[in-house]
Length: 463
View 1 (cartoon, rainbow, N blue to C red):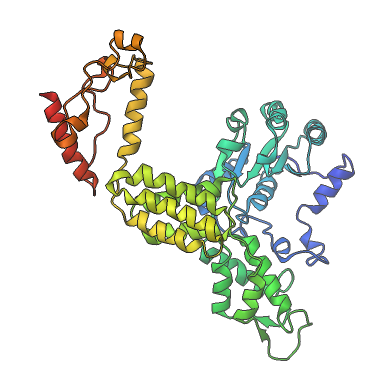
View 2: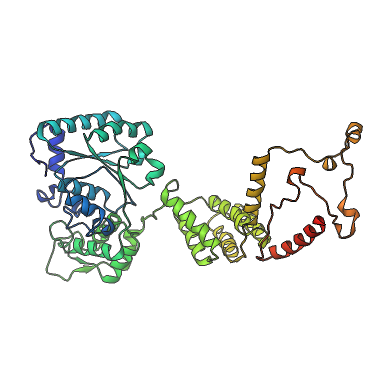
């Protein structure tokens, strides 16, 4: 284990060291949020992420060897990214330097790296450079970290709520292990809440307030796996209870009612970043639910998007695309329904516009499915890219001038309306592609009728 001496290198170093886990000096600082007061100070206090910290799992193996590689901690808010980084640094005896990508520039990073180099050379102590919201660093800023990570001057631990595959440079990703942190389960959140309610030094045990089980369950359900959100709402609920801010007394504790809990939750927002990974996850679930013919799930995911503030026109565009891509002529009415929902929304707006949207989602989910339109276009596109711009057969060209007529434009063209059944066997593709079939209808819905008709016509043509 590397030394953890506190010899001074400067005011910033001394302040950072004093602040690292300073709850013991002042358990309840004035104005310090409950979530910060209850921040775990050791792995034993840490709740959740057993897929990383459990026996035989990745982090338990790393900590057993006392060597910490550079890491990217990826997960939604309130899952313990910052806390885990602090604890890991302490466990391996490294100095912890926290930075926020929002507030930090390249110059500041260079200063911290220079301090880390001195700390390594003078005290033989490693430095964990924790970069919160690393996805907000530009490509150039991320590149500036590379040589210092490679040289081992710092152990980089980045935290991000966005998919690092899209937001972090490939070069930096290749030098770090990406660990996915999951939202906390209800049982894990309940354990955190009970700890906060029973802790008299850092928690809420001295507030003369009780939180009934059903109220606590409601707060947990609305927290979305986010420990910080749960503790923040719990703190607000206790604070606005009639005696939540009063000193303890011998009187019967005041209970936090469901109404108080709802008041505390009123500004609670759904986890949904319209430009981030959660956005793409919800959209994907929405489309896959419609494709899987599950109207209940499809309406749920649509509602998640709308309630989180997604532009309804974005959702409607996805529905129009879906109607053509995943239903097509299996139910030709699907595209009509989707575009009608779009028109209806533009006419009435929100909140009433959610009703034609819901009607359309139920219809699209319940309709027979076919991706023939997608597959047909893809096949035709391959042919165009393979063969290039093949010449249009002369018989299909319009003879608009005397010269065109002399050259044979339109000659031998058979006008289908002149024949029985308004059909005549003919070839319309370029000669090199004659007989190629791009469109292969399925037996789903109305497409079965189209398939039967095309099969008969193709037989006549092939004769």
